[in-house]
Length: 459
Picture 1 (cartoon, rainbow, N blue to C red):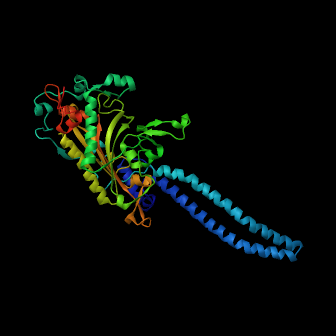
Picture 2: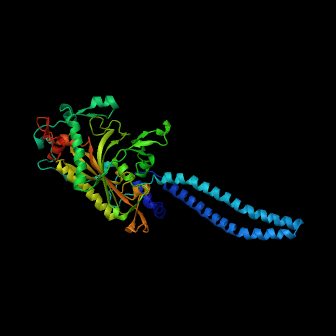
């Protein structure tokens, strides 16, 4: 969520940011509602101040008038009694007026919040302008020794490659027909060495982040409350992609949602908390099941493991101080961790700088990592690294106390970043296709062999 004060001070920045991200939100209406609410608040506070003044002054005046009643009668007495009645009724009348203003404020609050949650974080100034993924800019490529993606797989390896679907079928690593029987389209069953390879890449990536880069391993819920999805910025814009568990219709107190990434749970851990500056940066990693409806993807990548409803993902999250330079440095580091991982498994990849129209509502910047997939005759997205500044932490009310002054220092909203470490089984596509051998077997990269019971080849 953006800072409403910053929006008031520079609405053009946020209007241009929304336009650059192809997000429609009525910022003018938001500002009008905000101005109206602030006017009501000022009026209410004035009445409250007047009410307090009258309450203080009424006591002595009432006592004086009551004393005056003792020696009078007739019209004079009636006039004093009227004054007394007016003095006693004034605070009650003012209380009713204050309550009416409070009701008006409360009626405006959800309207303001609804619009405020729709305002995207403006993209950083160095993000290229573009309408969508076609306008993303390649910034780097890496190829293992002896492999050149500018040439065909057959030229590189000396034989015509099989697709990952053919490899999975021939080596009995997956069963799509029974997966569809169980759960419908975009479903699958991994079996035998296919399941073992899936678990191997996840465990290798998870341990890699813990042992080599000092991330703290975490287990977090993957079925969460709606406020967690809103707080992490996945609602309202991404609501159509989430599976909804309607517990409220079955007598439960609230509905739940299946998460599409471990980022949701990791970022929700410290929601509503004030951290000490000495705790930062926080570096968390999790491996979790993920669920996505793939709404709007009808007809796209319906076969195979590329676009599926259920998968597992190792996710890294960093929560750091509110410093742009530090956020940028962590973004670069987190991308570097993934590059090292891919290079260790000899997977050709490229980095894509996402343009403004492909950032989504919550990112100031995003870099996608795409791995080479021979069956697609090109690259396919396998990772995405995002820099969000205080957008999520403001929504989650996650702050830190500068200086660690035992509750005395000022509080500031944290910054957050996230990046896929490895998502499988999509990652099995480049892994299987790149490491297939002429006889149809799969060479297991050396770093994965300890997680495969020492197996060097899948036959």
